[in-house]
Length: 359
Image (cartoon, rainbow, N blue to C red; front, side, top):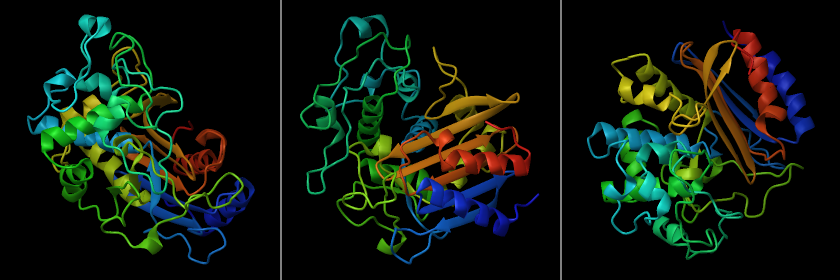
C-alpha cells in the first residue's frame, strides 16, 4: 500500500500553516524497508530553500535512543556489561557512594532506562550560550558549570523509581569516551553511523561546522509563532541526551536496524539479544526500554522515541512485529506535546492509511 503523496502533502501543508510549522521531514517504513519520504515546507521561514529528503533536523532527546545503540555495540564487543556497575568503567569521575548505592549499585541498564538514582536539578541542561565554552561530561557531573549547578549524586535507590534523567545519560557519555578513548561524537560515528553507512547523522555541539554536512542543508529552528529562534539553532550541553542531528530517512534506517535484529535478521549490526533487551520494559517501569519508550495500541507493541527542544520537535513511532513505522521531524517547537501538535496529526493520518494501530 502506498500513500498518495500529492494529496497528503496538500492536506498537511494546510495543517502546517495552522500550527505555525515552517518545515517537516517525514519518512515511513514498511517490512523494514523505506516506503516513502515526504518533505514539506521550507528550511527557514522567509527564505526560499525548501525542505528536501537531505534536510537536517535537530533530533533533541531522540539522541538517547542512538546513545543506547552505541552502548549495546560496546556490550557486543565485550567492553561493557549491562548489569555491571557504572564505576567499573569510569576513571576521571566516579558515581559517589552513599546510602542509596550501598543498597543497590548504579548499573549500565539502570542508566539507560532512567532508573539509576539520578534526578536532574531543576533548570539544568538548558541551552548553551552561542559563544560559551562547551562543557565536558565530567564538568557537568562535577556541577562546575551553569548547566548543572550541583555535583551529580544518587538520590534514591537505583532501580526503585523512574526519573527521566539527562544526568544519567551524561554518565553514559563519559563511559563511552573512557572505554573508547576518543570523543563521544567520534565514538558514535565509529560505533553506529559509519557501520550503517549514514552520511547525514552526527552529534554536534554547534561550535564548528559539522563534518559531512553543508550549511544549506541545516534547517533553522522556530518558536511556536513561526519565528526563527535566537542564534538560528539551539544546542544543549549533553550530546548523548540532546546533540543528535539527522534526516527523517536516516533516523528511520536506525529504527529499521533495531527491528531487523529484534526479529532475528542476520544482516543487522545488532544481535537479536541486544535488540530484544532494548525493546523490553526494564525494572520498575515497564514502559521504559533501553533508550526508548514502549507503548501498546490495539494489542500491538510500539517503540517510541521523542525529541522536543528549542526550535524543534520530532517523534518516532514504530511497531516491531509489523516491521513498520514513521519518523516525523519538524523545525518548530509548538508549545504542546507531540500528540497534540502537527506531529500527532501526521502520525494518525499515516497510521490510518497503512492500517496501523492508532496511538
